[in-house]
Length: 97
Image (cartoon, rainbow, N blue to C red; front, side):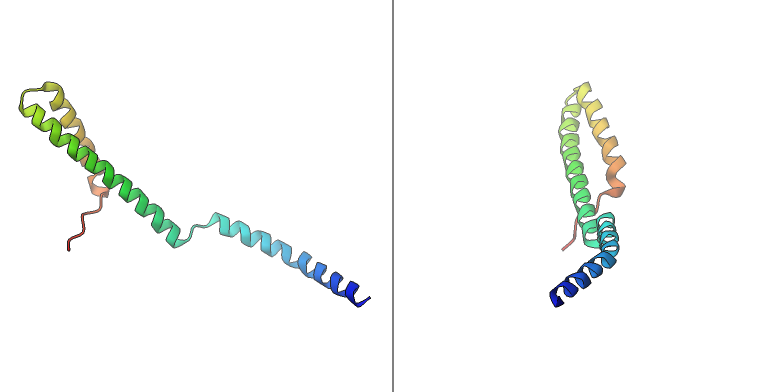
């Protein structure tokens, strides 16, 4: 009989705390921790920095070809330069050691 009372008490406690556990789990899933947000921002910055590097290399290559008289290369260099200028304000400066 004592085991039955313990079982009933445990079931009652589970019923009372279930809504709190459900809401708590939903809140955890809906919120992003600061470290997760920092990691996401870091990934975005690295991706953007990588794109900027690609554009810079492309710009230098096309600029050399443009100086040699290739009109298509001049257009490509201008396009790369325009995209570089568009993303430059958001690219983090290189660390200085």
